[in-house]
Length: 488
Ligand SMILES: Cc1cc2nc3c(=O)[nH]c(=O)nc-3n(C[C@H](O)[C@H](O)[C@H](O)COP(=O)(O)OP(=O)(O)OC[C@H]3O[C@@H](n4cnc5c(N)ncnc54)[C@H](O)[C@@H]3O)c2cc1C
Image 1: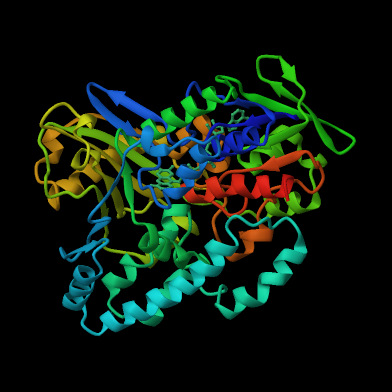
Image 2: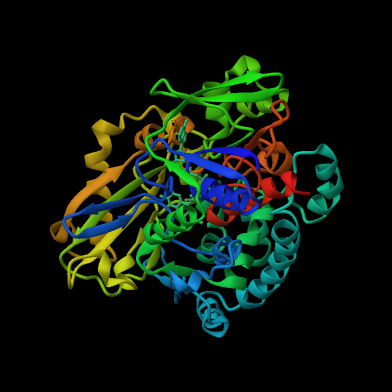
């Protein structure tokens, strides 16, 4: 039995704690916040409940597996409901497209938008399935800390044109601009610009098709709560409000965790769910890190920031689906402003979450609860968020009011927001980015921070900043990767 210390209680840290406990280790998890979940915090205001982070559950089997580690069943504690549609797209030209589980219905809609794209879609799906077989089924849970693994898989990645972007991949099969947008936005869900993210991430489309999209009744917060109870049933120690200030090192090992309250604790193994760049620059110190991590830090391209507007509505908008993607007038140029110029443009696109579509407990009776998530520049853009957030919030409500939610500017209640500045201060995320470093090819697999540190052999990484990457399935798989390294 080893003493294992886990830094951070996001989904990556939770999954790692459970997996290492199931292997018989003595596990303690620390988080600087007063609740588990990391980005999956829950906010409550005057009867309106908001999941602050992930809302779209894909690959639900990954959660089943965590319960099964201890001979338990997820269904005894949680109710995952399949959604239909998965996403409703509202395009700038006022047209709508429902993306969902019914293939026939979807093809019919594609045919109405652009008849010649029906065949193209089917060909694209076939290709995405092939990418999924390699990129997800074979590699997502596979350790990539050795260069030989990268060399082994490089020919297959090149053969699949992993050097192309998701947008280029999609455009090869689909011609209509709205469909190109709808089927290429997936990288944004893991922090990447579709015009720069490797086409390997087209696997997300296949992943959605294979397992569907679910909502956890009670929200992601309920999911975190049940995972927390599972951890406590298994005697995992959880220490809230424990902020790790630095890690001391000895003979190429992490010897001790030091907390901001002046205390410290020794562990045999340390699993970091904190952002790897925070670990390198703040917890260990730039001068003491491996060459690989120095390289990752120096050339890091961070994911975008997120502006998340939370509000209730005394009126229900029943035409608004559970998940809506509201597209603004520009696509490629807007993404360039956000990712490359770090400029806050006048226009934007929105992902709108309406949990009350599926679960009425999120708002007082007969009302709605929402969050509107808008990709914005990360803190490299130097925007003064405290100054601009109110104006920006009003712009978002105005835009929704003029399109899919008439009257929302008057009906909205209990409005508040999270800006990239909050992401930095809450989660200690470099540049307040939404998803750690971006999922571009030169930051994927071996090129990401390795799941086992090159220099400190008892230090392991899980979460969005390591392999395989951001998104709930990614970070839960990262814990599997660490388990596979420790127990080959
Ligand atoms: C608004 C939003 C919506 C999203 N929607 C979806 C979605 O619908 N579906 C999906 O699959 N993904 C979604 N994602 C992405 C997904 O939520 C994240 O990629 C994933 O949850 C990150 O998990 P993680 O394991 O990396 O940990 P994080 O959630 O980043 O948590 C890390 C934890 O470590 C703690 N920590 C950091 N440093 C220290 C320290 N020094 N000492 C102590 N504690 C520390 C932090 O406080 C935090 O609690 C969304 C993300 C956001 C922000």
